[in-house]
Length: 429
Image (cartoon, rainbow, N blue to C red):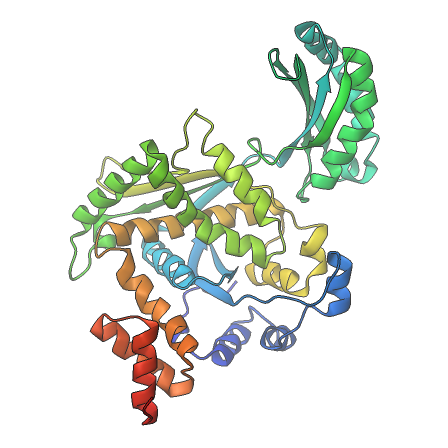
């Protein structure tokens, strides 16, 4: 991959940005043409993806630049409607370049399938009966998917959870732990759960009800780390040491207060969701797992951590469930999902998950830095002004002029945009 640091990328026109990506061989001419053409996802393809199709819905796709992940330059496609997300992630990645960028790692791609068992008078005894026959259950599950086994995946373990007191009586829930390799894994684990349910019923003496995956993918974690010195965070207006203190203090509130944690974690997902969408993955599953994971200690708290090391540097970490895949579903069907993966040079689902964690940490850092310095609105509203001006009907050169005037005045509103547009066009209403 050519260097992801592309000078003045944000100041180019969309066509020139694509040409720049072609020049550095991140995209081919044909791929650039696809991105410039609306309706790449044809109706026939869309009709095969979901039910009752009447059309397609597009989002802007931007490229986050400047990222170094595990020493590798990465250009990151983000499909998102919210202004500031792409710019903020790119800027934080640029600051982090001087300290080596982002370091990432991950666990094995293990997903859980749950089999709910009811009508069991002796749930603890049933648990041990299931565990005593663990290998038989694993073998029956693996008989469902020969291809997954040949690829090195398959059912690896069985867990059993007992809930002795529920409104439906004692409940036992068996978990199949499945290595899904480069798939998201829903179809594989659901098939296994349904296949082994009769056996688990027989072993436990119970009645199987639900047989489905869990989106709390707490065994399939992606991790990201970043370090920035005070010098890297110093600006003409703010001292880097004070910025670090402000970021750490802001994080500490998110760690203890669910009202702040919800917004803090939403900022993390601002970076992650657009990448999940751009690659055709299930962003709802990622969101569900992330927020459940944030509650794993008995209260809802921050997904990330921000600390100072012994040198006084700011160090940030993020550990998050990341059930993403490269095979199956829209990832294989949607042409732009395939193009997004190619742009990043991603070869495994684990690598995709790690990059997503890095983007989430970058986006979180951007929000915390803004909150602890000039406030969140200054940079966000400058970008939001473009949407306001577009809504008012501004086009071409008048768009930039109206945006600049509103930002300079500190008056970003639909009324002011309309007024400036009338002035620019010399009309009176």
